Structures are given as structure tokens and as C-alpha cells.
Amino acid sequence: MPINVPTHLPAVKILSSENIFAITQDRAHSQDIRPLEIAIVNLMPTKIATETQLLRLLANTPLQVEITLVQMDSHDHKNTSQDHLDEFYCTFNEIRGRRFDGLVITGAPVETMGFTEVNYWDELCAVMKWSKTNVFNTLHICWGAQAGLYYHYGIDKYEMGAKLSGVYKHKVLIPSSRLMRGFDSEFYAPHSRYTAVSADDIISHGLSLMATSPEAGVYIAATQDRKQVFVTGHSEYDMYTLDGEYRRDIAKGLLIKPPANYYENDDPGKPPMMRWRAHAHLLFANWLNYYVYQETPYNIETI
Image 1 (tube, rainbow, N blue to C red):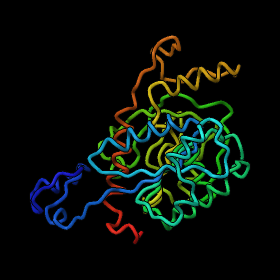
Image 2: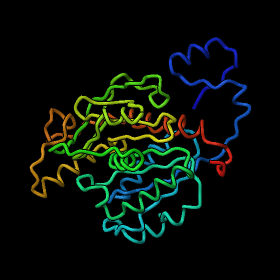
Image 3: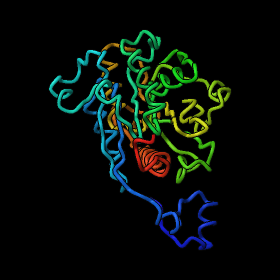
Image 4: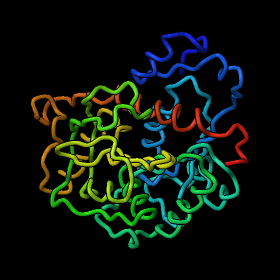
């Protein structure tokens, strides 16, 4: 949250030049406050784990947030009990008449398939079309980012030949961005995918490339109006998520390398190193505060 300072205090200009957010008394007195309405389209098969990961990050701010969990009605959810879905999830048809301050579209383990081969692709396209008129800001994660880039801009993904799995160093490209406020010039984030998008494609379509990695490629991109944010990694992952994926793949007999820069001394027999927690909390706090709370209209029906 911002600090509230006198409007003409000299420190306001200094803090602004350092990309630190200070709200003046004039603006503070005119602000209305209400809970933020955030919908999460959870495409991950491990729904309960993903819910916990995302809610942990969305809850770590002073902002009051009301969450609506959304499932794809056109998909058979084999890994989550129907009782859980019935009690806690809505279908898209049940919320399509509502408006939301923010929308999160998660990743999904389908990136080796063509987009149109995914059995809920048409329904997801309907969600993304709806988001342009009924949602103020959308955060796309991993395959959700690839799906959003393809649907909105025709930017396709490409296969990398081997799975990208690990915790990689990234560089901030636009330090003045509000989404990057408080970031170190270099930071770590997890990735777990077989496909990628091209930085040249991102730039040629007029999108802002905000953070990249020499090894993992494009990490964060956004539209010029900042209404859509695309994050190709999994900053929401828990400490042992990559470990669980690695051991699952080994049990399937897949020839796969251990996640890079993850285990102590790169030894899977040793515990993982949690080196992205601070970045994860900062990324979600910045998105929720600067891209949603500070910009969304007070009357949600005007979105």
C-alpha cells in the first residue's frame, strides 16, 4: 500500500523518481474503497494445490479481496473430486453476467498440444473474449500466458526440444514499470514447460517486454495499456512443487534432467532451495495494487 504524504512535500518527487509509490493527501481524500473482485480460472489438474499457492500470494497485502473460483465446464476434471468442484467452483456460464476487477488464468499441462486440440479451448476463448469487456485486468500464467498471447495477438508457441525446468535468473527490462517496483535488477523465478514464445514476436506485436532470462527466455510481457499481463513462469509454485514434478516424471520413466538451480549443489538427494518467494509476493502485490486496485473503477458495473 502507498504511504499518504502532504501533496507538496519535496520527498514526493524524490520517491517518484525512485519508483516508490506515495499517494498525496488530495488523492487519498478522494479515494473510495471496496473489496476487489478477483476471479481465478483454474486450469491445473492439482486444483487444491494451485488454489492454495495463488491465495497465499493474493492474501499477502492489506487489500480486501473476494475470490471466485472458475472451472471449465467442457473438461472432465479427473484429479479433483466433484464434491470440491460443486462446493467451491463456478462454471463460466454462471459468472458471464458479472464483472470483475481482476482475472487470473492459470497454467495447464497441455502445452505440447496445439491450442485448438485442447478440449476446453472454445470455452477458454469465450472466457478471454468476455474478459475484454467484463474484467479490468487479466493476469495470465504459464500456458495461460501462451493461450492469451495466441488468442489476443496470434503469437504462437514453439517447442524447445527438452523440458525447461528449474529456477532461473531474470533481468528487469523496464525498471520504471509499476509492476517492477521494488524488484532487484536481477531476480529468480521457477519455470516448468516444454514450449516458449519469442521475444521478437512479443515486441513486433507492440507489447511491452518487462523481464527476460538468458536461459528461460520471455518471462513477463504486458499490453501497452497494462490491462493484460503475461507471465510465462510459475512464481506461485511452492518450495517442493518442482521436486514433485521431477519425481513424477522419473517414475513415468521419462529421461529428464533435475530442475536447474533448484537443489543444493544440483543434487536431487538434497533439499530444494527456495529463492523466489520474495519475488512471487512482490509480483502479485504489485499487480493487485498498481494494476488493479489503483486503476479499477469504484463502481464495478462501469468496467
